[in-house]
Image (cartoon, rainbow, N blue to C red; front, top):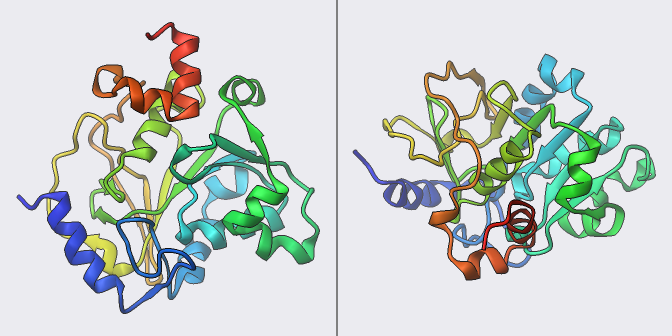
Length: 245
């Protein structure tokens, strides 16, 4: 069975032909999840879902491949939360209607998010309410919905925090937007922290995943070092809330 590291390396080579370079990291895919040619068509498929149309609050990762989706959320006046890069500054909340229509493309970029959105901690996030929809990029995703990122497990940690706070549960729809070259045929056994998605949107198709496994819940504190907790503001906040040393 192929290891995620081996699959990532293969996918990264294929991505070079379709990825849109990052302004800081160029094509160093170990540092970021790229935007790609055809992301607009892939995003169309997500925006056509009933779950998208009905949602009141979404969570979106800071991946470059999410820029178009963030732009549409802003343009449609839908509230959403985005984690900052590597969660180093926690989360940002984009309230509906605060971005002028002409500024939506800029606001969807990471620098634009920093300008228009405001920081939000877990305590306030818990008061705002549950997420109706989650969207993420991925380095690769299997056809049965197992996604893996750059190798730093940030989305898994975010999911763990959100389940701990009751902001998401087994029924919360999760979508991955990726290029077709990022969908792999290998069979993967999900780890205790892997998140299976419900939808895989690519430029050429939308796949609905029939999940067989339950998603994980909570944070496995014993897997984290004191430094990892101290250096990640939301984890530090949750650890304080839960009395974790």
